[in-house]
Length: 139
Image 1 (tube, rainbow, N blue to C red):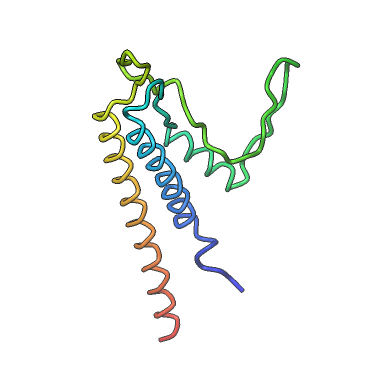
Image 2: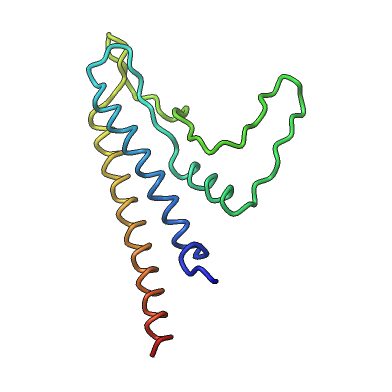
């Protein structure tokens, strides 16, 4: 039997996007919850890179990693997200070592919510197309 939903690349892409957006919103919420925790450092990941990696892995187009030097780290095939990247260094750090910026986190949360909503809208449109195809086939 042909599955119209799981074989649809648009729905799969939007599903990956919504999953990553949800994970990122969780990290942002954690950052905001720890705004007064001494020594806490902002955690985040690059959404675009994580989405590209997730899509490459789901499409099976992932190239195998090769160790060219015994000192290199071995690559693992897990789909875990990078918790922190070099891009997440706010311009300041308080005396207690905390670097969480409420303004930055609020901006990141708004951007991530927009990304999630757009992905959801695209997935809904694709599902409506499939539903209409089924209706047309019955007629």
